[in-house]
Picture 1 (tube, helix red, strand yellow):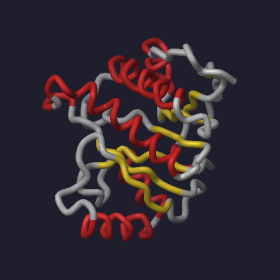
Picture 2 (picture 1 turned 90 degrees about the vertical axis):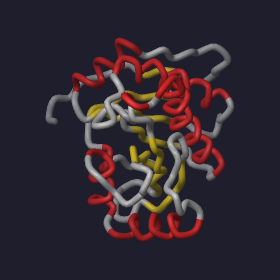
Picture 3 (picture 1 turned 135 degrees about the horizontal axis):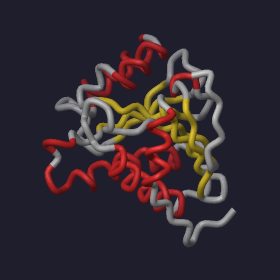
Length: 192
C-alpha cells in the first residue's frame, strides 16, 4: 500500500476517502464490520480484534452476557474500547448479508452507518473511520453499498455537527475508486 493517491473529500471536507489499514487510523472511533456474535471473525472484524488485543473481546463478552445475549442485531451498533489500537474506541455494527437480506437490506445497511454515527455523536466523538460495511464476505456489491452509505452518512452529519470528520477507509484502491463512481453524497443543508 505504498501507492499514495489523493481522493476527493465531500460535505465540506467532513468526509474523507482513504486507502489503508483501518486498524492504524488515529481517530476517536473505528467502526468494525462485526458479526452478530461480537466475538471476532474474519476480514475487518478479525483485523480489529487482532490489532486491539484482548481488551476488545473482553468488553464484547460482557456485552453479550448483559445487553445482547442473542447477539447484536443487524443494523445495530455498540461501543467498546479500541484496546491497543491508535483509535480510542471501536463501534461494532452488523451489516446485512446481501443474498439473504431481503427487501430491507438497504435500510439495514443504512442503519449501520446511522447508528454508528449516532453513538459517536452521543459520546462526543469527533472523528470516525468506517470500512465498507457488508462488502466483503457478506457480498453487498460495492456500487450499491456506496450509494446507500453515502446517503446515510449525509443524513447523519446533517444532524450531528459535532462530528468533524468521517473517514471512509478502503483496503484496496479499486474499492475506493468504485465507491467514488457510485457515491451519492447530498450536500443540501450542510454547512462548513
